[in-house]
Length: 66
Image (tube, rainbow, N blue to C red; front, side):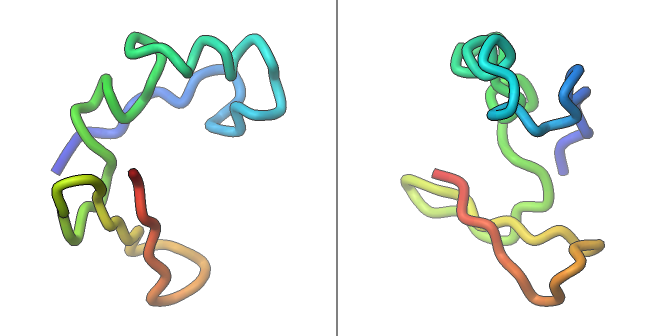
């Protein structure tokens, strides 16, 4: 499992800050690129990962990261 990465000044809500969003669109600013994959991976396909946070507020929810 990957170690958590600092989400930066917006706490992960990057789309609310245009400058932060522009920075995150680079390999150096991308949290997933820097940590070599998303957290809490439960499945991996050739083009995406399926993740599930065990502490998610909505039980049994899955996030697909392309």
